[in-house]
Length: 386
Ligand SMILES: Cc1ncc(COP(=O)(O)O)c(C=O)c1O
Image (cartoon, rainbow, N blue to C red; front, side, top):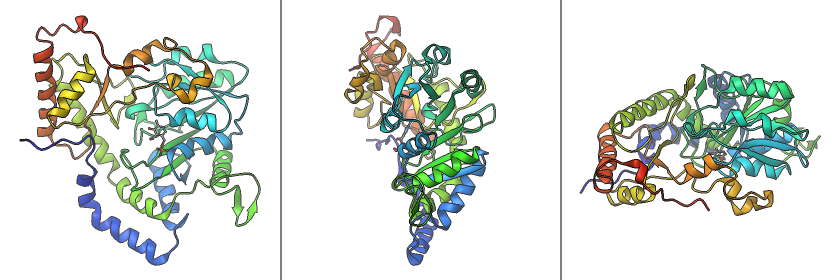
């Protein structure tokens, strides 16, 4: 019996880094300076340099990164933020946390990213910002989005929580947007061993306000100039992320090679493989295929010891938490169709070519049984929208 292929296997990543990480953590514990110390400050410089931006601010998690940016821009009740419903709940949650209203546009059917053709029609006098999500590791066309935002005097807050190292025409997030939020959730391309997040920006004033808000609105201990919050990054997590940052480029390049191998092996199968858009450098945080009979395929793969995911099964506009927005099924047809068909295959740097071949073979053998003629048009798509 072949061994299982996990969706993400972080034990394999940890083994070669273990000594360096443990030495760094031990040093932090010996010194007992646990928050916003040398490691956080170094990480802020190192990851900002990696992203090609002026300022980097470590925060407690990606959701807080989005929240703190919105607070720094003084976005609040009565304001509207244009975003997408095909994303993790945190994108819209952060908007709701400041009392603003998320306004959703549909996605592009090929990249699953914000459909930029629909943005201008959603702009009202209440719109303050656009929040694109660089989902699955691929950036939105930021040149086009910047032009739209500038025409209407809007800010851009980039949800780059899945896009560490992704580029559009050679530029990473926050180079054309006003600020970007990253998550160091443990399974991200760059992850901590607990919670962590990061804000990058070229804007001096946003950076200053973000620094204050993440630490109770203070620049000087016990002097609080504004109402802030506790969104600090801790030193132990900063140690872990600093060690991993040195490998991020290599890991992303390996992910890209894995994606190319998957695409080659699945070329003659009924599934649709991810598209890297013109100008984009996709870093494949998730390798999301579109699959006829998705739920049956997922169950079949599980029986073969291959674990997959769905990102995300229920779009935000149809989540109970956002029922107050008054959306109905059918409001975002491209998003709603996609969520019933998408399937995330195992994707991490330590995945071997043999495992990729095994996954592709299993997918092909499923369709050889269920779609022997390969007639995708006749397939009734399964998967629930709500
Ligand atoms: C697109 C997106 N936005 C926001 C977040 C929130 O990040 P965190 O889990 O670190 O709060 C995540 C991560 O899970 C994400 O994938």
